[in-house]
Image (cartoon, rainbow, N blue to C red; front, side, top):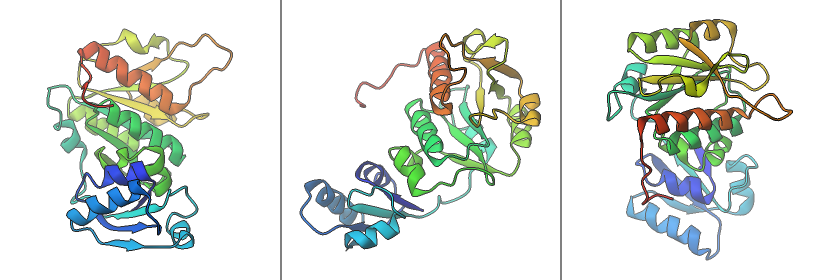
Length: 246
């Protein structure tokens, strides 16, 4: 996996997954700081001209730095993230047909901020975990546990077997998102903008909830909607933010 940009690479270097770092020539102090961190971790640091970095980043805005990440040590399962929570109530996000890498990245960034236990995504017909996704996630892609599944409806049934309540976001749902008990083990299921949840996925959810809106536009960006419901869950659970983080 390729990540690029100063912040995403800095986050990636906090893990043990970076295998190589490529830097633009020059004396940019922020780039030199990344190089110093990489060398201390035993990561090879190689100079590359701008054209080479453009090719590595496939035209993305790399800010003079590109890193290569190895895959996670092992594939995670639904059971892994359902049991990962420090409390008895895991908080999970399930993505149904999210194909835009910028939306995926924004959701991962929000999920990381909310301290979710994992994100479940379909291995096909979904946005790739690409450099564009990593950039949009501000590096959160290196931290959020991600489970790839073949079938989302089946994944929802597996969550139920793990005693996790599944809550689908649907604009036409009668029940509001803040009218259900989110202190229970919860997985929010979100669909693509425009199409929303697919029929079988929608029917598989324990609850369908909506976010009331007062304006003229009848839907929110999927990453914004995900953030609203995740932080409502944190509010109900009395979760206090870590003031040492920005």
